[in-house]
Image (cartoon, rainbow, N blue to C red; front, side):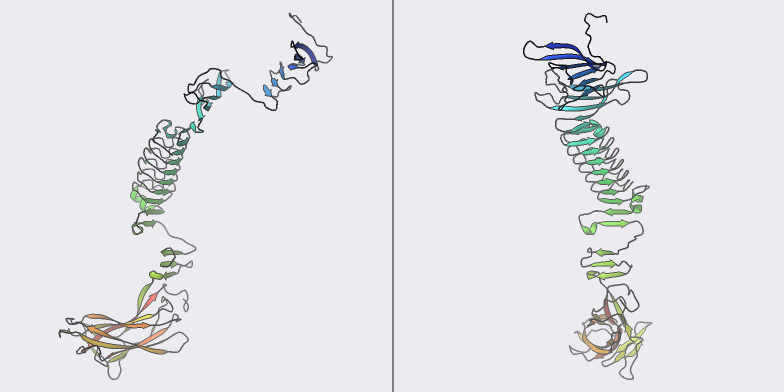
Length: 515
């Protein structure tokens, strides 16, 4: 070897460690060794040949080991605290100063060398403090040695750039919140997606997820949207909720809910509910074709819900007060039941004109209106009606309200009230039981000035039918008796109908003989 200084080891094998240069300190036993082992240059220390050198350099592979004799990569650090420190000694307080970088470079097929990515840490702010930031840069394809910053973690913990934010706003995506439009007046906004909340300036409390979600929101507050272009045209509308592709996209109203793709796409009004999943022609078309269209209002009576489609259910429904007391119930088998104030009434009618007249004390069949006739009754006249069956819709066990329809034959112009009194004899029985009879008596007051052919409703009383069931039967005898409350109404008086009002709680019965 031709060199100013040549040192040859004495090991018998090339793979053995060869002693090289030993450097001893002036005092104490500090010795630095530079030895050779095969293709490695090792730096260690000690008073004898160092077998665990602190550093090794392999000139064949270019690999460097620190605390490692056989590094697996270009550099390998081995130890109980393998830390790396980058120290910027340029004193200063500038924003972005005191920076340290790790650059990741590569060569293209044409041997062009560029920076693929970079990590930079520096000073956050421009005051004399210890705040730091952490930046990540990525080459987007043509950045050369100046890759684009995509992420910054500020000293406050906020993420910016692709994550863009202020002290009270957080965004994730490309061109989020315009990346430059958000002013200090915008607070509590959260956005995830490309161009999310693109034009937001002073809006507060908006939460958007999706491409261009809430794009045109500027000063709107407390809107929530999930989906591509949701609430796209909203600029000042507030407190809207939209989920689905282009849900609520065109309108600028407030306090609405849009669920589904294109739900409420055209709607410009406020306080609306849309559940839909199809493109509609215009606003009116959307309202009549959306699966559900509703209107919210402070007063319950002003709210509405429209269902545009066939309602299919397998467990019935309760419509009214929510199934507490007053409601209409649709049973799972499709039958209908009325509860509480939802009850309805109907009449079990006993016709007078086709009733049977007795051999004596019978009413007179005479002219009623110009071309009709009806029975008129003098005192002690009576008539027997045919039997009737209670309706299958009757609310079992409830009372029947017996009444008469009475019409004057002549006017009362006597100067004082006149009176007509009646008794209804009522025979009735339940299924498989014996007939029984009761009676009801009531008196009708006919005021002075009553005209001829004026009809009156006379309540006769209530028939108790506790424990009675459907197919109970009834028949009546109706009789005029002498008045007791005052002067008798002179002459005959017409009876046009006898009836019993019953409360109904179903539409018919589920079976022929059972409710």
